[in-house]
Image (cartoon, rainbow, N blue to C red; front, side, top):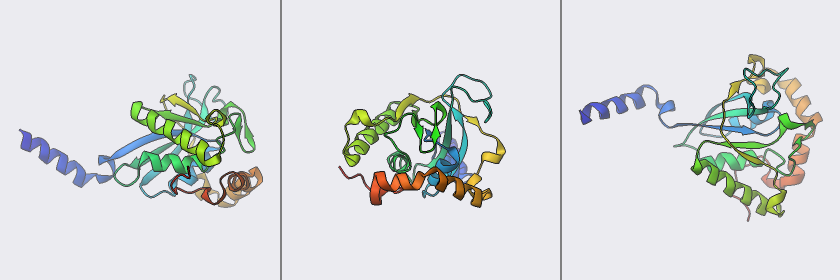
Length: 200
C-alpha cells in the first residue's frame, strides 16, 4: 500500500508540478493593480490575483467592499521562493509608515495588511516588521502594517486582473500621478522594489 501512495505522489508531481509546492499569501498594500504587478515580477511566483479580504461583507465588489481591503492573493512555489523573500519585496513596494492608506489612495480599503494563515507565517511577518523598522531606522511602533488572521479571499472583477498588462498606458499614468515610485525611492532608496537582504 505504501508503494501505491508513493506512486500517486510521484504522478501528481509529474502531472501538475506547479501545484505540488504551491502556497498562497494574502497581502494588502494600496491599489491592487500595483501590488499585483510588483509581486508577479518575482521568480517563483506563479501568478497573483486581485481581490478583497478582511471584512465581513459577502460577495464584495469594487463599488461596495466596505470593511474589506483591496488585496492580492499571491500563488507561489515554495521550492523556488520563500515567504521571507516575498515579504521583503512587499514591504519595499509599500509605505509601511502609513496606516491610513497608501500613496494617493486613502482610507480603510487601502491600509497595508499581512494576512497570515498560521503561527509560522505570523512569526515571519513579525520578523519582517522588525527588519523593516531597522532598515528605515524608525521605532517598531511606527510601522503601521497590520498583521491579521487570514480570512476569505474574494476575487475582484475580471477587468481588474492583470490590469497593468492589459491597460499599460492607463496603469503607468495612474502609478506616476499617484506618486508611488517617487515615494518608494525617497523612503527605501536603492532598496526600493527589491528583494535584497535587509540592512539592519
